[in-house]
Amino acid sequence: MANLGFVGLGVMGSQMVNRLLDKGHTVTGYNRTRAKAEWLIKRGMRWADSPRAVAQAADVIFTMVTNSAALASITEGPDGILAGLSADKTLVDMSTVSPTVSRALAAKVREKGADMVDSPVSGSVITLQEGKLSVMVGGRRETFERVKPLLLDIGPKVTYVGDNGLALSMKIATNLSLAVQMLAFCEGVLIAEKSGIARETAVDVLTHSAVASPMIQYRGPFVLRMPEEAWFDVNMMQKDMLLAMELGRQLNVPLPTTAVSNEFLTAARGMGWEKKDFAVVFDVLARMSGVAK
Image 1 (tube, rainbow, N blue to C red):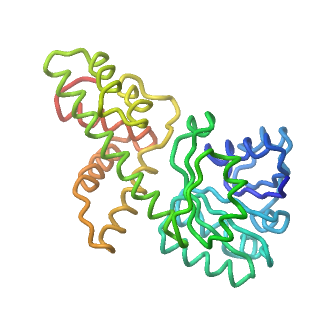
Image 2 (image 1 turned 120 degrees about the vertical axis):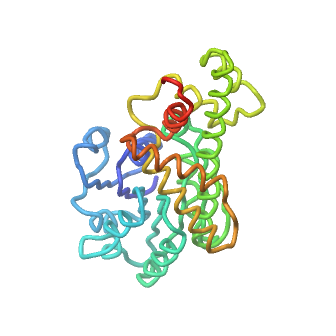
């Protein structure tokens, strides 16, 4: 059993720690808000008072935070992870951030004699709880092989994609399609509804048709009833879309459907729906179509 650390105990991070505890690993954790971690502490997770303390206590440190700024806040400074790293430790960052930011952090980690991989995931909290999460990894091959068994304890599909930053490029390439698919699904539902087909019928047909990706199958019904707690809110989805468009500009890849989908996320934010699941783009399009939700 491994001696692990985990910084960032939000919706996804906490469920990952729960799975690691189930596998018998020792986990030392830190979160900006301790209250969110109390249930894990009761389960046996050890609490640390700073990211630095987590890094000092663990051999492999996982991080899962919202964006590049949050990653900097837990890694930099006297109480940051970098200050607690030493030779032979490994940092596994599961956040979705800019590949450039991630590569720069990996270089700082190596200056400490440690190593780092970027390891974002594809899936939701439900996917994670069901044991169906997909994990991508970028970094040195030998480091990947060391942490692969731990990642398999989190999700059953772990894929090495190449050097540092490339797993993040792969995650961005995956996530841009989520918003694009959702918007297209909403268009289909609304054109069916305005033709005279009941919304429930349209959703049922589309979620059992050739267009029904796994994401559409579990998120499509949200156009009938939104979840009380967002699985992936508008702000988080737009952060990934902006990362995609930034990468597209760098690589000279046009992303027309990404750009259009991003505008609907902006509209959702303008309507005050930034904390709702990004499936709320249906409500935006419904209003534009003169359809009551």
